[in-house]
Figure 1 (cartoon, rainbow, N blue to C red):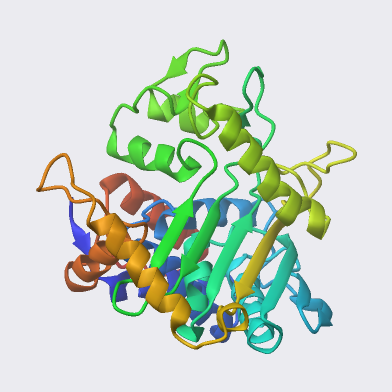
Figure 2 (cartoon, rainbow, N blue to C red; figure 1 turned 45 degrees about the vertical axis):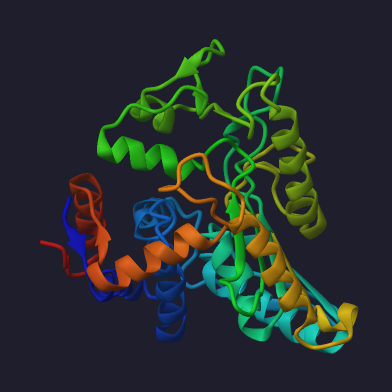
Length: 358
């Protein structure tokens, strides 16, 4: 599998977004946020999303550029309307606002409505780290793809949760997880690589396990499992977490629930995704600057000191695999399957942009 330099990936995305008519400042922000997912090894949420963005734009479900508006701006909260554009720019605005308010008030909350996919949630929660804050990000998504425990049909989306907390001596804690067993993008990665999926990720319409990634990804509707896989395995917990995410992201912002209007059940002309962002300044709670970070170091040290089953595979803390991927990919580039390269080539050709991978 060839490796593509990060700067080449950035240039490819920038060429396509510019061809769509996105302003240069929004192009720069969107490119950086998309490619940050690739750098962290989250291949499902970087350039791998470009074909879907392209198709949704052609369907009229994504407006480029979206008209972004701040609807409410109070001492501890912000409400932003994304104007049905791509979600990256309004998501960054929302997290920046939450960070600024947390520095003044101890906590800051932002909610975005009328949005679209914004990439990897962890990209936004980790923005808080540079300010010494705890960051939390959650979002609904655009399609009903997750089957609740005991149900026949999917009702909600993969609904990711991301949280980041600063340390001093150790790398920061950074969790980024779907509330489904895997994210939709993981199915797409397996489809592009031609690999069979593990049992427990997706279901057939009769409720039996689906291991064909092509069939699972293109199923209408998709039938994926809540985190836990089965009720005996704890899928009711993933189900509960997913509803929590939708309450804070979709219901609080007045957005769609799994791509559907909560009251009418209609999909409407736009995906209307809602997202939630929270920043917390630990100094307001601990009083002494650096006390929180010192205790985070102690907590992370405890995790690292746990005796592993295999000494060659030590116990890791969330965020460490992404940091390892970052070092490698900034040096060597990101992997590019032939399938994804072909999809990006189609997008570039149809958009009137140059294809840079061939």
